[in-house]
Image (cartoon, rainbow, N blue to C red; front, side, top):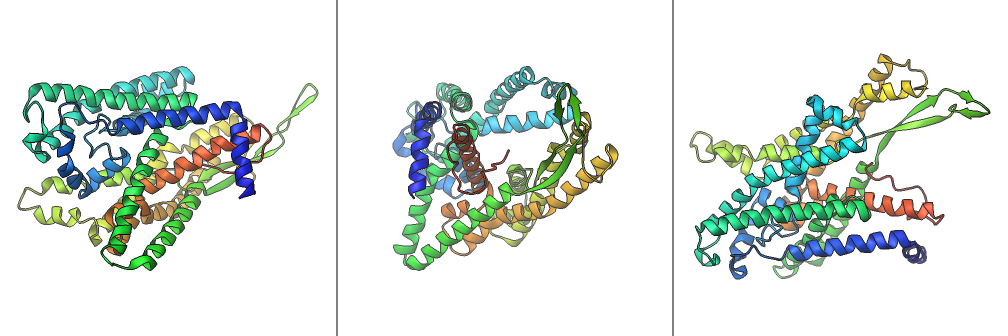
Amino acid sequence: MKKLIETIKNIFKIEELRNRILYTLGLLLIYRLGCFVVIPGLNPEALGQLEQQVSGNGLLGLLNIFSGGAFSNASIFALGIMPYISASIVIQLLGIVVPYFQKLQKEGESGRRKINQWTRYLTIVVLLLQAPAYLTNLYHQLPEAAYVLGQNSFLFTVTATVVLIAGTMFVMWLGEKITDKGIGNGVSLIIMVGIVARLPHALIAEFNSRFTDQVGGPVMLVVELVMLFLVFAATIALVQAVRKIPVQYAKRIVGNKQYGGVRQYIPLKINAAGVMPIIFAQALMFFPMLFSKFEVTQGLAATFSNTNGFWYNLVFGLLVVAFTYFYTAITVNPNMMADDMKRNGGFIPGIKPGKKTVDYLDTIMTRITLPGSIFLAIVAILPSFASILGVNQQFALFYGGTSLLILVGVILDTLKQIESYLLLRHYDGLMKTGRITGRS
């Protein structure tokens, strides 16, 4: 405890780090205040029905968590940062198949600025589709008395669409400012704050279910918290786990100085795909529900609408494993790694440079991705198991899935940023032994 207090003091002794932390907290506070500003033209007192509808829907409930409750509040930030995330994913995939974006990725800082600009444009396109869809959902869920200008008012539709687009673009700007002038990972921090903001509500709901309804009592609540701690610990191990590949660099003498001749390591992550496989798999799992109106496919839609059912979780887990391999294959390029090593005079001991090195790296990635993908699938379906065992649905979401992985990953990245400042100023890091590796 004494060391923790001393570390916190050291953090605030570094002027640059202190200013960045305060700047980040200030922008996050602005974001949280905006989550409670209702869209102009709506009566805030009539939004209770929307909250009930969102809490009972898997996809909408997930979006509500990512937006920190802004979705169910009909806030100006209701769409949150997710349209920007969707646009970023599309641009990232285009960078694999479209030569123009591949060229931009290799142009350094100038290319990164152009990619960011394309991402902003695509975000607006996504918003032009999502904002009217969100308003259509409001029309079906809220009574006519909730609309100041009338339920089918053209003026309200246009102004609300503009407000939602402006709200998301402002949130995106906040994320970029946190990345540039704060402690980094601006977009990820905004998502994490939204997730953390829903944790007290979920915990209170679980507390009430155990004590008010006399289900399980305090003993069961303690068991749940212990299990949640163990799940967090296992997820941290998954996020930080790496396989180190030794690389030997040839010795070169330039003038009176010697370069190379040292052994370094390539850290290949067990979970190189991160949270993306769960997001992709979750999106696909909602497709069968689109056919619920057809009599022939009603049985299939009913099966996959039950998030606690056997077939839903089996298919969901298999999709996570498949998408983990797919996303790892498109993000980790053994050919590029082998070329970089060859260009810098490096080689893997016992492996010939060139195609042999590529095959070796590809084999290692295939082997370590299997346990990583299986563990990721278990994390993805853990909320369903928690819900089956009697955990409140809101609280069960924190036992796994995208919420848990984002929460753990962002916290580790933020701690890594802070630790780098401490070590640079010759202070002790945040850990007594070892260092925080984060996701990068």
